[in-house]
Length: 433
View 1 (tube, one colour):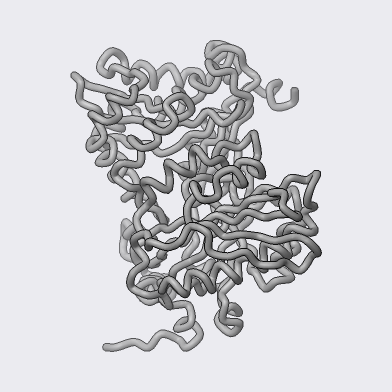
View 2: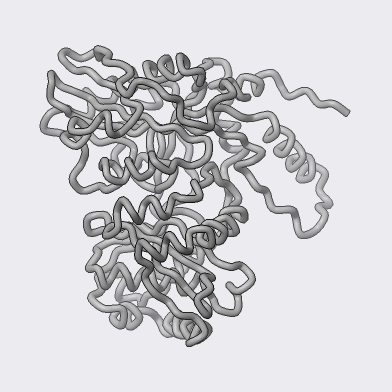
């Protein structure tokens, strides 16, 4: 029997041209448009090389993910269906701020993987809700203009030099520039009916307040799991745990024992094991409930070549067979855990994932980092090593005002929900210190 999707949802379906999955060869500099405030302009670049020194002059000195070195590596090996753009904002001729634009094709049926229920539901309405969600997912797709970075959690969307341009001046300029970006991309054959502002910290209410006045709908997704590192040694870290969680850690170490050899991988090894790494990554990515990003097969190799010191790869081997790996970024005193991969069939017996989490803590301590960002997903197990949830807000708007009325309900329908219990592995005196 055929089913007609309710009329409002038709506006939320795909409105993009067919040629969105590859980079389109275009002039690097696309526009220089006047802003509403005096003597403030912006320019939209289609490559980070074209933005060059102006980007460097305005980018932060303490956030690797808004700097040209990382962005160049990402641009060379972008996720499937993603295109890049870069906004530089000027006060007079002085670069005053930057923002990352990612144009990503989103198809709900491919990005959302709902687990099959373990038993048949006896509730008619529960079954109907599952059917309706799957039916809508097959209809919802669009090219989305994302302000931020889909590969990381946290405030990596924009930066403004406060001594040159205030946030109050910047936000209307950003809003104006996104409209121009949409027009430019439409000239390339890519319509962008949806705009997403990603990962805004609620502690600073100004961006969120402004976004709501512009018709954006606020929503939250899973929190980022983060951890402060007041420890000088890994032994000190273990000693700060309660007996229950220290015993759990030692049990995980014992499970792995001498059966697995662990080592940091250099550029040559990352190249050698590239196919294995991508395969292991895919095995884990395919189990995620929500995944908008499919990495490029050469992403890890490209990063290691471009950033051999800041991007680190650690492998777990059995007789020179790679069975697991994790990656990290040294981000100016903070450690950002990045993508991982492991052999699911071996995870239970060797506790691969649990050991990776402990090793990430060990790496952070050894490097003298003050903070670890474990990112989203697997919230409960990350809390067992000491991570705590940190909330970020996102804002979405459909360019069609009628369809935009239903944006919030659609987000609620598809955003991932994970039922979890936060664990508290440290002794009580550590929490109150």
